[in-house]
Image (cartoon, rainbow, N blue to C red):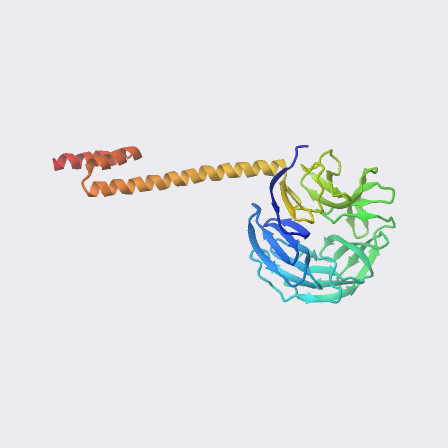
Length: 343
């Protein structure tokens, strides 16, 4: 497996509480601010708040931000607020974009709060304590990991209901990504599965132990796991995504060719897969070629205008020199005729 490449890195004022990446670039929760960076690392916009920002979630067009006890929603491109924020005692633990539009956020108790895409509240569901939101199987079926290590499917349509999809208990699991997820059982074995509301479409053991996952992200070449010490490794291949033994605290992926990482102290890195790095180089070469063509065209336009001015002023030698340099033989013959007629 080819190594990933760190395309750029920044040191920002910490602490960093969350990082996310989408098609627009990177989102960083740091201190009391949410910072949006473009894919080249330049700042697109910044939103400052009274309380610490601790979690961001993107739908590519809209961002949900958790800060203090509130959830706020912003336009992803401009950073313009789309809501005044919704607060509850104790605040929210996380937020997840809902398939088809909207957000869901668990509180510190046993409720899930459902929001429209613009941040307006829709309803509150009492589902019992949950450890984490795993992801959506479709718009109405949400998968959660409860405090007992059981995977529960919660149906939101109509009178909400829930069911345990199987009796196996997991000590850890990842978020759903592309319909797939990782799970760790009590023996330390790592599994990958494709869940449905009643069980599994498929499930397989991919490791017998030796992995102590803290976070996991899925990229174009499979799953990357960050262990409890902050080291990043591929779930199957012997690769470290170019991080070596460096430790990080946060990672996220766009699901294909980009992995972003951060330390709490503020070291931000944007890493690209070999295929994306090659595409970036090709795009850079194309841009350079187009820029050379543009500059050449501007130069030729300037030369042609100078030749016309020289012709109008009767500076035949200068006009001939410029027309010949431009390869305009017809203009050369015309100016020669004018020059002979004036002699």
